[in-house]
Image (cartoon, rainbow, N blue to C red; front, side, top):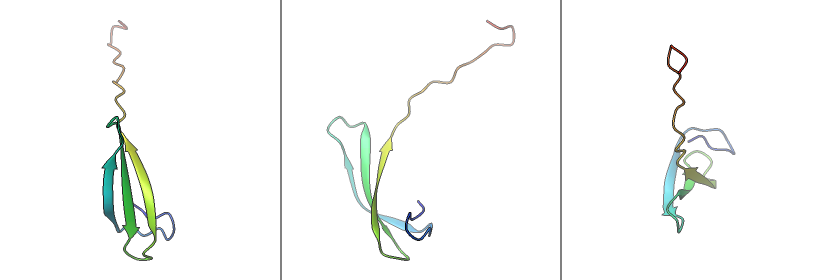
Length: 57
């Protein structure tokens, strides 16, 4: 994950927690270069692909 402060791609996850429903994961991250901390929220996107057959049905 790229640091939003300095742009360095090297970050470490310091803490991971799920919300009560279990559909969102919160991660605390630390930049290896500038040592600043930031939070990311991850959610699963369960959209199914829309399939169109060659005959149009």
